[in-house]
Length: 352
Ligand code: RAM
Image 1 (cartoon, helix red, strand yellow):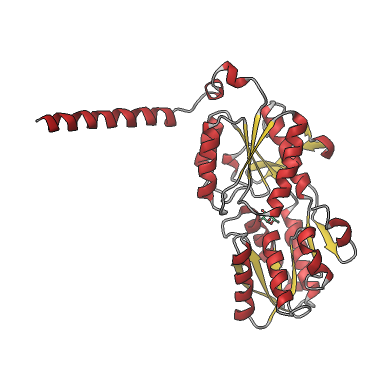
Image 2 (cartoon, helix red, strand yellow; image 1 turned 90 degrees about the vertical axis):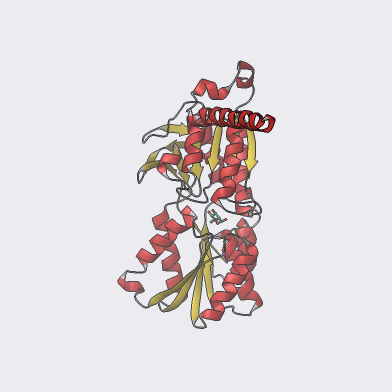
């Protein structure tokens, strides 16, 4: 009997705990609730930056720019990234940032849609959410900071590879993760470009995924070379992938036989541009992208913008920005991709 009453008491307790939990998680918090007490409100604003994963020098450069911007605005920066480039890892981090009551989250998304519930929860808690580099869907953020026009990126990569292989032969793409919004957008543009009559003799044989992990990108490159002995070129629209492919092609003595292009960091690719493995490649300045993302987050937090088309703000030394349309959402669009080759790589390799 004693045991029975004990059990009843435990069941009642479990139910009341569950009820309390669901009450706090399902209730959309008002802005003032989420900011907590008056003492929590004082002090510098907290700006979180969540990149795809740790250990990516490109991500570190963006973080550097973001930090510079937030320092100029007097805010506090929190840098977080999961070990692996997964949406799950980012969801855990965002839950923690919501509990920490940050003022703003800027994210390079590992998935377009999977982060929506947690980012909506963040926005309901009064946190200003924006994406940069790799977008999350329009419902998951106020605005996206886009590094360069995707049509120009995809167009330049296909035009470039066509020139490298004389408009004819098998090519493959070595991408990041299969869920990465930015790479998937660029791949879509490339596939569309390839339908143009001038590219009719180019055949895309495979899209491989190195997951922005060095070892996986190396083994995927080796796999491509093995499976497609007639491969003429690899396009890697990821800085991690292109550097790994550059190393594999160099080590295997394939300079001139299998061409390489894509999006690379000059600091990591100078060797492969100089040795001819990668005749040329493209990128933008990741420090500037992070910097503009920092000022975008600040403009949202300070209420200077809401993220709607036509909103204007000044991004420090990057000047005036205007928010424009982006499919069903809005974005800040930065410049065109920049071409790096033997003539200019020396002057950029120490910058980023
Ligand atoms: C990798 C990442 C990043 C992308 C660059 C070009 O570092 O995938 O998101 O923008 O490449």
